[in-house]
Length: 255
Image (tube, rainbow, N blue to C red; front, side):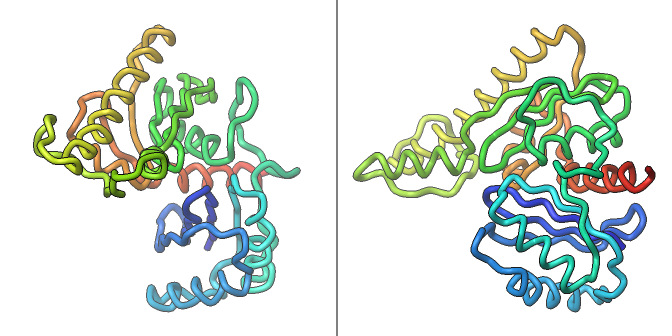
């Protein structure tokens, strides 16, 4: 079995894969201070609940955009699973795709590879609702062409709350009406429909600039909140990142 770890700014996502089947998935709040031992205590209990034998895990791969957390995640793999993990960005890792431009994070590369596997020969826009809201452009050959990075929804809410004296912290949800009649209702409307407008506007500009038909999918923790609220997003693919990690592991070990 393969242990796939995706460390983002908000959460670290762990997946256990048996062949092509994801047999377990869990999230943990990202903390650079969490040791490998602390990761192990938490993860071993979850493996036991799913009746997954830790000894069955014989390989691991890590994608991380939090360098301070990578050391302890590597320590988790070497000490508790007795495997040396592949780490995206290090020698020995093969993506198998062309990356145009610079600065693509490990998570965005995984999304690109996952998209090319799930939807081959299809130009795409991947909207990822994470700490940042990212738009990744993939061409028909499966290459990463660049994209857009916008502030994430929760990040925008925190900025709004911290910069004002009376506005409360809210949870992202679809409001019943656009015109709010209370402060909280107004905030819900502004955040939710503001991001719908951002999604539709950016996707429209990407499509115009790309010049060819493109499929638009979404992923990330808040993707389901916007399901059905815009016809721009055609499909939610929650496991696209881990699918990309699985494929990168296969391409790297096939060498």
